[in-house]
Length: 347
Image (cartoon, rainbow, N blue to C red; front, side, top):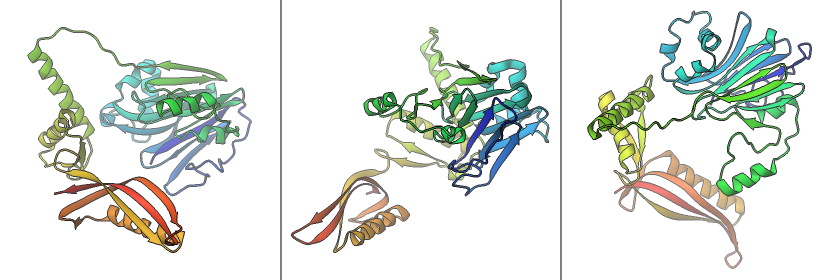
C-alpha cells in the first residue's frame, strides 16, 4: 500500500504538528513501512509505501504516488539528484496538458511554498485517489478519506446526502465523500489552491468521436490498441508471476491470449467458466462455547485459504466466505458458526 498526504497553512508562521493520530502516515498509528516527510514553513508533505515519495528541489516540493507505464519515457531527461523534477518542469511548461502524457495510475502534489500555491492531480480513471478539505486557514489532502480532517483537526461529521448515495448506488460518487467537510478529487481532475482560493478543473475526459471506418480497418485498430494496452500494463512486471482473471467472456480471454503472445510465457489464470468450476459449500462449526465454535470456524477457513487439497474427488484451489451466521442451539446446548463458502475447484 502506498499513500501520500499533506497540509498547507495560509499563515507561513503557523507550526505544523507531527500528525499523531493520522492512520498510516508518519507519526500516525501505523508505521509498518518506511515513511518520508518534508516540513517547510507553514506546511508539510508526507509519503508512505513502496511507490510513494517526497522530494524537494529549488523552490518546489512534491509528494508522489506513481504507477506509470511510461515513467522511463517521461523522465528521460530528469537529473539523477532530482528524479521527480520532470513533473514540475512539465507542469510549468505545459500546464495541466502535461498530465495527459502520464499513462497509468498516479496521485501527485506539487507545492510552491514561496507562492503559497499547491496543485493536486489524480489519474484519468481514479485508480489512485486523493481527498481534500479546505478551510479559511489552509488545505489538507491525503490518499485516505480520514487523513484531511485529521490533519486539520476537523470533526468527522457524516454527510446525509453521501449516506443516501451509498444506500441507493452502493458507492459515494466523487466529489462527495462520507464526511461533510471532505471532498474527493474526481478522476481526470486537478486542484489548484493559491493563498486560500480553491479551483478544481478537469484536464481530461473520455471522448467518443464518430469516425466512419471500414470494418477491417476498425478491427485491426482494435487489436492494435488492445495489444498496446496489455503491453504497457506488463511493463516492468515479472511475467513468470503475472496472471489474469477470466470471466469466460471474450474480453478477458483476449487479454490472456495477448499476454501469452507478448511474453512468450504460459500465463496463469483464475477462471470461472474457463478451466475451473465453483460451487457453494456450507460448513458448520459446533462447540460448547461461542469461542470454541469461532476458533474451529476460523481454523477451517484459514486452512481453505492457505493450501490446495482434494475433497470429494475434486481439487480445491480457493474458498471465499460469502455469508456467516452465529447461532445458539438451545436443544443441543451448543453454539454454532455457520459459513457459506464459494469454493473454486478443478474436477
